[in-house]
Image (cartoon, rainbow, N blue to C red; front, side, top):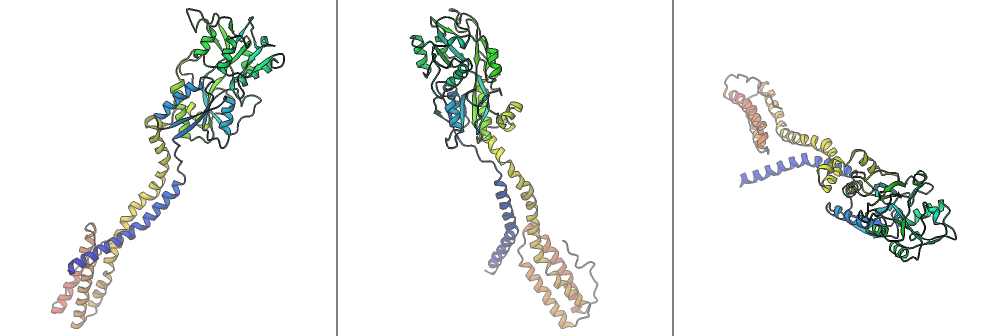
Length: 456
């Protein structure tokens, strides 16, 4: 029972020594990680909200493809419909709208002479979305020829209306007797084919079936901008393109001649608070979805940092300069983001954990050794008394104290890895005991060489 009690006591002592060594290190590590965690980037949200006008610029079709791409990377894209690009940009800029990104048409806002929304930045242009001016009647070669006509310019807040009004006002064709009608895309096409309006302004991709079908309608003409170069100089968000003869239908030769078009860009806009990791993911989606060739653009031409009236975000600038961040090239999106966020945690690991990992065993060893080494003072005291020619009673008392020291040291909890310190002490006790025993027996004493050489 005494042996069991002694073992339990030794274990408790050993645990206490270990805890005394580990506890301060644990506190320091916890503090270091807590301070460092303050600087860890927040995780990106798993849901994005996009504002778009579904009837404008082919945005609805494009948004569906973005939804599919983002879903593959664990991000849900929610769509919020607006009346047009103007409304989409306004919603994106609003503080409490909950909208993170938007599809919009260049030139709707942020252009020359227009105020740039404070919280909106561009991730790049995605494609050319031409302005189509279909009309009935005698051929005209510019917007000036529409003076006095009934013109469908698109609903309020739409990008189509914003661009149409820019061109009409520049040519002073926006006042009476010209009639400007706020019809949406489908209503405008129907009104033109039925002869209820004389002209319509539409902004849509060249691949749009509606555009190609309308271009083939008898008695409906497609305006070719003879002054397109001048418009692009005045309005940098517009570009000049030539729609080749017959590109819509070779058999019917639609259109029946080359047509010069003006085209704004489809933009991917983001709120300035968008998480950087999601910005890069969206640009990867843009490269995947918008990188193929179309009727007016070449393979790899988009996405691109084209002039659009909005400043490029810092992530977009880096993306167009160096491409996808290194981690996202080789790791899944969420894994790459986790590594990117937590690399800063290496600071406490390198600066605190590694040194403490070395210090804790040293502190523990010091605790074990200190319990043994304190008894060397008694051994030294006995040796000094031996030099003073003690009598038999003193020698007996010295031997008793020596054996007491040995018993106490034997009770000290020492891990096997550090047991050498205990055995060194026992060797030194034996050296002193032999000297005492010889003196008690009256034999001449032969001093041991280096009797108390202590191993640190």
